[in-house]
Length: 515
Image (tube, rainbow, N blue to C red):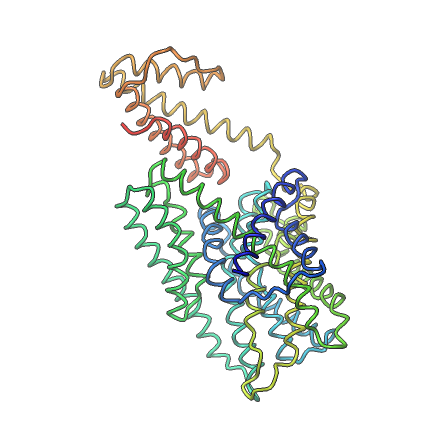
C-alpha cells in the first residue's frame, strides 16, 4: 500500500506540474525533475528506493514503443549512416572519456570508472522524445537525435555488462572477442525478436475489428517484445524499438479511423502517466543517494559538472563531421546543427535503471568500491542534463536558425489540404460521369470540397445524410488517405503534417459512422 500511495501522489503531482508547464511554456520533464528534487529535500519525506527491474520491465517498454512509433522511417533511411556512427563510435568514445576523467577527478577505481562511462555513454530515448515534442526541427535533424537515442542501447549495454563483469571479478580481464559476440547477440537478436513480434501483431491486428481487443493488443505488444527478447538473452530495448518502428509505419493500414483515434487517446494517457512518474523519480532519487555517500565524497557536484562538460565536448566533436549527411544541400560542416544535436542528446531513465542494477558485492563477497559515488554521479548527470539542457533546448534551437517557421508549417499544411481536396474532387467528377452515385450525393460532396478549396465556409443544405452520401464520403476520405501517404513518400510533406492531416481525416471518417 505504501508503494501504491507514492505512485498516486506522483500522478497527482505530475498532473499539476504538467498544467503549469504548459502555462509557463517550459518542458514538463525538466519541471518534474525539479519538483521531485524539491519534494525529496522536504523534512520527513521517506527515502525512495526504486528496484531497477521495475523501471526496466514496467516503465520503459511502452515509452520506448511510443517513441519508436513516432520515428519517421522515411527520414531514417536518409540518416542511417550518421545514426550508425553515433550509435557505435560515439558511445565508445563517450565511455572512454568519462572513464578516464572519473579516475582523474573522482578517484574511482578504473573498473568502476568505466562502469560509470558505460552508464552515461548513450543518450536516453524517453528523455529525448519527451523534450523534442515541443521543437519544430527539420525532419532529418529530429530523426537523427531520436534514432540515435533508440538504437545506441545495444552498444552501451554491452559496454556496461563488460565493465561490471570486470569490476566484480577478482582479477577480471576484458575478452574483446566475447564482447563483440555479445554485441551482435544483443543488437541482432533483439532486432530479430522485435521483427517477429511485429509480424505476429500485424497478423493479429489485420484480423481484429474489436476496439477493445485492438487496445489490449497495442498495450501488450511492447511488453511482449521486451520480455521475449530478455528471455532469449538479447536486448529487450532493441526489440521494443524495432517492433515500434515497423508497426508505426503500417498503423494506417491495420486499423480503421475509429480504432486509431481510440489507440491514440489511450497511449497518450499511458505515456503521460509513466513519463510523469519516472521523471519525478529521477528527482526524488538524488537526495537519497547523496545521503548514502561515504565521507570524503563532498566534491561530487563539481565532478558531475566536469563529466557533463566532457560528454558535451565529445559529442560536439563526433557530430560535427556528420552534419554534411544531415544537411547535404549545404555541402559544409555546420556548427549550428552539431550544437543542436549535441544539446538535444540528454540522459534520462535508462542510465538510472542501469546504475541501480550495479551489484552491491564483488565475487569475493566484499563491498563494491565506488558504487555509491557512481550512482550519485549518474543521477546528478541525469538531473543536470534534464534541467539545464531541457530548459534551454528551445532557446538553443531558436538561436541556431534551424527551427521551422510557423508560416512554413502552415503553408505546407494548407498546400497538402488543397492537394487532398483536388484529388477527392477528381474522384467525385469521375463518379459523376459514370453516373454510379446518386446526383444529390455527388452535388453535396462536390460543394463541400469546392468550399474547402475556395477557403469559404461550408453551408449545410438542411438535408439528412443518406446511405449513398455517407458511402461517397467514405470513398472520398479513402482517396484522400491514399493521396496523403503518397505525398509523404514523395517527400513533399513532413512527418508532422502527415500525422496532423491523418488525424483530421480520421475524425471526419469517425463522425460519419459505419455505412
